[in-house]
Image (cartoon, rainbow, N blue to C red; front, side, top):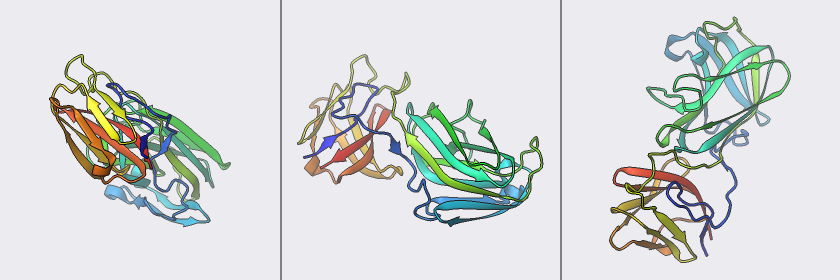
Length: 272
C-alpha cells in the first residue's frame, strides 16, 4: 500500500499524515566524509588560501590567507532544490581557533548569485565566532520561484573589506543542516488561473487531480532536483494515476503540478 504524507498545496491539499521536517543536505554531519562539500579559495583572484579535510566526523578548515573578500574562502554544498513559499531552517555547529566573523546563506550556485536567505537578494547573514563551540540558527522563507537543483548553501571564511584582518587559524565544523519546514505558497503562484481550486486526492491505488481549468502535468523530482516522472493530466476527464504506472519507490520526493505555465511544488513522502 502506498500513501502520501504531504501533498500539493497552494491550491487545496489533502494530507493523509503530518510530515516531519525534511533534511535537504545529503551529508549534514560529514559522516560521508567530504561527499557533497567543496572548499574553494582564491576565487576570482580574491587572494584567499585554505585547505579542508574531514577528521573524526568534523570538517576542519585551515586558513593561510584571508584574502580581500568574504568569499575568498568558501565551503559549499551545491545542486540543492529550494521551493517557493517553503520555510527553511539553517543550523550550523562550529568552533574557531580565534575570534573571526563569517558570512553564510542559501542562494544560487551561479550568476546572478541571488541570495535566498537574506533580507534581500544580495545580503548574506553574518555571525561572529569566538573560541568556544557555538550553534548558529536562522530561518527564511523562499520568495523566489522554485530553484530545482540550482541552489547551494555556503559558509564564507574570507576577509571582507570592512572586517578586521584575520589570517591563519582553523575553523572546525561539526554540522551544517538545512531543513525544509514546508509552508504555503505565496499569492500569485496558485496553479488554477480562476477562483476554482485544484484538489489532489490520494488512496491506496494512486491519486486523482480534479478542478483543473486546463490540461496539466504532475512532475516528480528527487530531492536533488532530478526529474523522475512526468505525468500528463486532462482537464476534461480529470486525472487518475495508479502507483503501479509510476516508477516511484518508497521515499521522499518533490511533486510539482504545472498548469498554464503556473506551478506549485510540495515535498511528498511515498511509503509502501
